[in-house]
Length: 94
Image 1 (cartoon, rainbow, N blue to C red):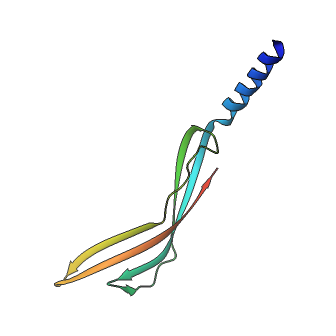
Image 2: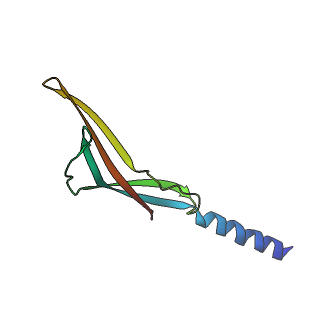
Image 3: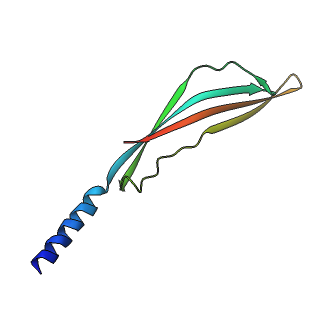
């Protein structure tokens, strides 16, 4: 009986101690930019976001942020300009 209680206590402690607050850090890096289908020079820029995930196991924590595509349409002088910017995301769970 004592061994069963001891094992149950150890398992409960192990499971409880695995759940903790974690940090997801994602870095977006500019990959390409086009205006009306014509490739444009890109500024080598990065943008970092940090998200806090509370009380999860490392296996259960989702730390993903897919690549980002932004489409912008402007009209100037009767001409429509469509800009498409693509950013690559790399995420890491701390």
